[in-house]
View (tube, rainbow, N blue to C red):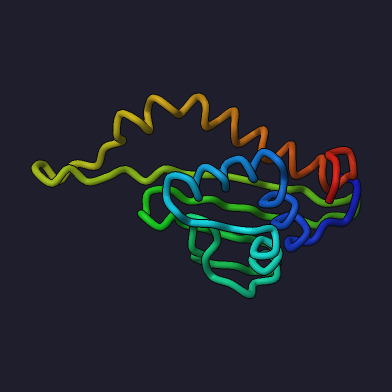
Length: 140
Protein backbone atom coordinates (compact mmCIF):
# COMPACT_ATOMS: atom_id res chain seq x y z
CA UNK A 1 0.00 0.00 0.00
CA UNK A 2 1.24 3.48 -0.78
CA UNK A 3 0.18 4.75 2.65
CA UNK A 4 1.74 4.29 6.07
CA UNK A 5 -0.47 1.74 7.86
CA UNK A 6 -0.01 0.66 11.46
CA UNK A 7 -0.53 -2.88 12.64
CA UNK A 8 -3.48 -1.68 14.75
CA UNK A 9 -5.12 -0.08 11.70
CA UNK A 10 -4.63 -3.28 9.70
CA UNK A 11 -6.07 -5.52 12.42
CA UNK A 12 -9.11 -3.28 12.86
CA UNK A 13 -9.77 -3.05 9.11
CA UNK A 14 -9.37 -6.80 8.73
CA UNK A 15 -11.69 -7.88 11.55
CA UNK A 16 -14.37 -5.18 11.10
CA UNK A 17 -14.86 -5.54 7.34
CA UNK A 18 -18.13 -6.80 5.93
CA UNK A 19 -16.71 -10.13 4.78
CA UNK A 20 -15.26 -10.91 8.17
CA UNK A 21 -18.43 -9.74 9.92
CA UNK A 22 -20.21 -12.56 8.10
CA UNK A 23 -17.68 -15.02 9.52
CA UNK A 24 -18.17 -13.49 12.97
CA UNK A 25 -21.94 -13.98 12.64
CA UNK A 26 -21.43 -17.64 11.73
CA UNK A 27 -19.10 -18.09 14.70
CA UNK A 28 -21.75 -16.59 16.96
CA UNK A 29 -24.46 -18.80 15.46
CA UNK A 30 -22.57 -22.10 15.52
CA UNK A 31 -20.10 -21.63 18.39
CA UNK A 32 -21.95 -19.11 20.59
CA UNK A 33 -18.88 -16.84 20.54
CA UNK A 34 -20.09 -13.30 19.95
CA UNK A 35 -17.67 -10.53 18.93
CA UNK A 36 -18.05 -6.83 18.22
CA UNK A 37 -16.26 -4.10 16.30
CA UNK A 38 -15.32 -2.59 19.68
CA UNK A 39 -13.61 -5.86 20.61
CA UNK A 40 -11.79 -5.86 17.27
CA UNK A 41 -10.47 -2.38 18.11
CA UNK A 42 -9.39 -3.66 21.55
CA UNK A 43 -7.61 -6.57 19.87
CA UNK A 44 -5.89 -4.13 17.52
CA UNK A 45 -4.62 -2.12 20.50
CA UNK A 46 -3.44 -5.28 22.31
CA UNK A 47 -5.98 -4.86 25.11
CA UNK A 48 -7.64 -8.29 24.88
CA UNK A 49 -6.31 -11.80 24.40
CA UNK A 50 -9.37 -13.44 22.82
CA UNK A 51 -11.55 -12.43 19.92
CA UNK A 52 -14.46 -14.42 18.45
CA UNK A 53 -13.13 -18.00 18.19
CA UNK A 54 -9.41 -17.13 18.53
CA UNK A 55 -6.90 -16.36 21.21
CA UNK A 56 -3.76 -14.29 20.79
CA UNK A 57 -0.59 -16.37 20.75
CA UNK A 58 1.70 -13.40 20.17
CA UNK A 59 1.28 -9.74 19.32
CA UNK A 60 3.90 -7.12 18.54
CA UNK A 61 3.78 -3.70 16.91
CA UNK A 62 4.12 -5.35 13.50
CA UNK A 63 2.63 -8.85 13.87
CA UNK A 64 -0.36 -10.69 15.30
CA UNK A 65 -0.54 -14.47 15.60
CA UNK A 66 -3.91 -15.96 16.58
CA UNK A 67 -4.87 -19.57 17.30
CA UNK A 68 -8.43 -20.87 17.19
CA UNK A 69 -9.75 -22.13 20.50
CA UNK A 70 -9.54 -25.75 19.33
CA UNK A 71 -5.86 -25.33 18.41
CA UNK A 72 -6.35 -26.43 14.79
CA UNK A 73 -5.83 -23.19 12.86
CA UNK A 74 -3.56 -20.15 13.04
CA UNK A 75 -4.01 -16.69 11.54
CA UNK A 76 -1.16 -14.25 11.06
CA UNK A 77 -1.28 -10.56 10.15
CA UNK A 78 1.81 -8.41 9.64
CA UNK A 79 2.72 -4.93 8.47
CA UNK A 80 6.10 -4.14 6.96
CA UNK A 81 6.75 -0.39 6.83
CA UNK A 82 8.87 0.84 3.95
CA UNK A 83 9.94 4.08 2.32
CA UNK A 84 7.19 3.88 -0.31
CA UNK A 85 4.39 2.70 1.99
CA UNK A 86 3.44 -0.45 3.85
CA UNK A 87 3.27 -4.09 2.84
CA UNK A 88 0.41 -6.03 4.42
CA UNK A 89 0.60 -9.76 5.01
CA UNK A 90 -2.04 -12.29 5.99
CA UNK A 91 -1.50 -15.99 6.34
CA UNK A 92 -3.30 -18.92 7.83
CA UNK A 93 -2.39 -22.47 8.61
CA UNK A 94 -4.27 -25.62 9.48
CA UNK A 95 -2.55 -27.85 12.01
CA UNK A 96 -2.92 -31.56 11.30
CA UNK A 97 -4.55 -33.71 13.94
CA UNK A 98 -2.82 -36.73 15.41
CA UNK A 99 -4.38 -40.12 14.73
CA UNK A 100 -4.69 -41.71 18.18
CA UNK A 101 -4.18 -45.21 16.81
CA UNK A 102 -1.13 -44.67 14.60
CA UNK A 103 0.30 -41.42 16.01
CA UNK A 104 0.39 -40.15 12.44
CA UNK A 105 -0.40 -36.50 11.70
CA UNK A 106 -3.24 -36.07 9.19
CA UNK A 107 -5.47 -33.44 7.75
CA UNK A 108 -9.13 -34.25 8.15
CA UNK A 109 -11.44 -34.70 5.19
CA UNK A 110 -13.30 -31.44 5.86
CA UNK A 111 -10.10 -29.40 5.91
CA UNK A 112 -8.91 -31.00 2.66
CA UNK A 113 -12.30 -30.46 1.02
CA UNK A 114 -12.39 -26.77 1.96
CA UNK A 115 -8.78 -25.90 1.12
CA UNK A 116 -9.56 -24.32 -2.28
CA UNK A 117 -12.33 -22.20 -0.77
CA UNK A 118 -10.06 -21.21 2.10
CA UNK A 119 -7.34 -19.94 -0.26
CA UNK A 120 -9.81 -17.77 -2.18
CA UNK A 121 -11.46 -16.57 1.04
CA UNK A 122 -8.07 -15.56 2.48
CA UNK A 123 -7.39 -13.38 -0.57
CA UNK A 124 -10.86 -11.81 -0.29
CA UNK A 125 -10.26 -10.98 3.38
CA UNK A 126 -6.91 -9.32 2.64
CA UNK A 127 -8.35 -7.42 -0.31
CA UNK A 128 -11.28 -6.24 1.81
CA UNK A 129 -8.94 -4.91 4.51
CA UNK A 130 -6.83 -3.11 1.90
CA UNK A 131 -9.94 -1.54 0.39
CA UNK A 132 -11.09 -0.34 3.79
CA UNK A 133 -7.68 1.14 4.53
CA UNK A 134 -7.58 3.07 1.26
CA UNK A 135 -11.14 4.28 1.68
CA UNK A 136 -12.47 2.35 -1.32
CA UNK A 137 -14.23 -0.31 0.72
CA UNK A 138 -17.06 1.57 2.34
CA UNK A 139 -17.49 2.81 5.89
CA UNK A 140 -14.58 2.56 8.30
